Length: 169
Image (tube, rainbow, N blue to C red; front, side, top):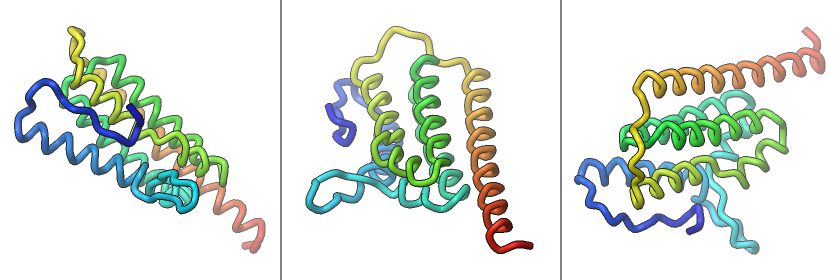
């Protein structure tokens, strides 16, 4: 199944769960697959476009990606899957700090689509694994948010340094 298609779910979800899943799917589509590039029929989303804003863009899209992780936890995903999802987010945020190359990486990597794919795989074929420990989850989210803020701060400081070097002040 491609990263842009949603899977049919064999187990019935409550209306509230379906609403949450649809919100996550919509956010993923907007960030990773909402714009079709003419001529090559490849989809990109707002993530690499917002990411063009030094520091602030990666901060904003990184925090939106954390929302997908939070919803995955609420669906009861195991620790290993949540860790993989956090890694997907972290890799995209860190790579996004490299001018141009990071934005091209965002176009290809699509962390949100990957993470929704992992969520849907779990919902389609739930494994008899234990749900992630709440302490572990809070720790991983806190570390991820700290890393996102740190990366954004670093990017802003680099922009300020370059600006001062060019303009002088």
